[in-house]
Image 1 (cartoon, rainbow, N blue to C red):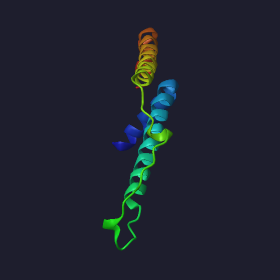
Image 2 (image 1 turned 180 degrees about the vertical axis):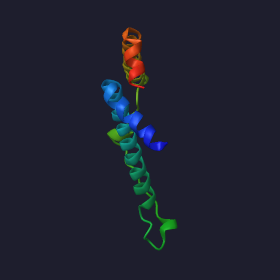
Image 3 (image 1 turned 180 degrees about the horizontal axis):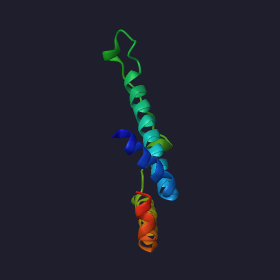
Length: 109
């Protein structure tokens, strides 16, 4: 049963190349971001854990460019760009699906 699922998935990867590329690259970027986030959290929790008086240790923060305030317009512009990109991708895929030959799409399933 699972071999049929893998065969269908493999055929769909090659039948819908652009859609597969978008999906696989999005999955890869999401997994890479999750790994980097987990590594950062692990490093932050492991600092000075070897010290015998670790409950009395304190971390001094310096104020620099990393603590600069983030303006609302930066968030709005980046959110609008992400929204436009996703709408363009969805629109392109919708138009492509509407103009496709239904017989051809049934053959690839």
